[in-house]
Amino acid sequence: MADLTTQFLELPVKNPLMNASGVWCSVASQLEALAESAAGAMVSKSCTLHPRDGNPEPRYRVFGHGGPKENKVCSINSMGLPNEGFAYYLRYAQRHDHENKPLFVSISGLTLDDNLTMVDSLKDAVTPAILEVNLSCPNVPGKSQIGYDFDAMDTLLAEVSSGYQRPFGVKLPPYFDMAHFDEAAEILNRYPLVAFVTCINSIGNALVIDLESETTLIKPKDGFGGLGGDYVLPTALANVNAFYRRCSEKTIIGCGGVKSGTEAFLHLLAGATLVQIGTSLYEEGPGIFPRVLDELAAIMDDKGYKTIADFRGKLKTIA
Ligand code: DHB
Image: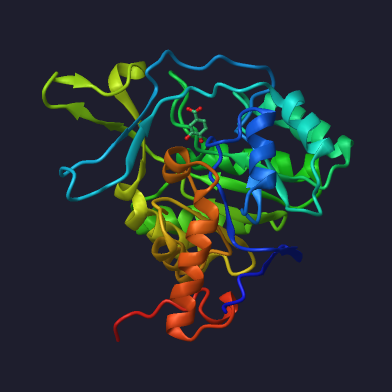
């Protein structure tokens, strides 16, 4: 039977699966369910310095285009950062059993100062929780994504590096242009404390329309929201592999379009060390983890791979 254990920044991890931030991780009961689930690691909801209600509902919808036969699982959301505030997730981190599984704390401050304040208190709290700075929330009206403003990204990474003085990671939006992969990677590589990169956040500002009612699926931002699920898999794999190739000193976390062992395998093959599940976790709940782990192990067994290191990052291209 395939060995699914792995390592993340030298920490032993039982398996490569975890939740995508935002899904099943906003309140303590959900975080506890993830802690008890088969997931190898977990991340808390991206938080702001102060609690927020987020955008009006409906603000998250699942849809499957192409009719029932296609069986696609897609989502659109414009949550608007509803969260309990940084102190809440810090309190959870202080009582989390980090030996059981690593916990990432995701922060998404509304300003650089808010991010630096949260970074400071996380540093002072001396918890083993791993910091992830979200550079890619697409859903706060009037705020653009830091990951799409390379000067702002450079400044933020400089400030967080000098404030935190410990390894941390960033959650990136998807990029769609080779020049943007190059430029983003070049900036990330200036900061050795950026130990990991999570690719990708949702494909921002998509519009899904219901044919019959001629209405948007979600209410905020006139229906514009971040796309997740099946539609984003190829973009996610491209971003994972693009940063895996360009950031040889950094670890990649893959996120986007994972619903079975197949997509988890593809993310690992493209270079991811951990693999997150968002839309499908929202649909199935934490019981999805043992299913996807069994499917991943079966694929590895079929192919004769005994460990993840046997194939991670070993994507073949056509000569
Ligand atoms: C939200 C959405 C995101 O994609 C993200 O990275 C952070 C927050 C949200 O709308 O709550």
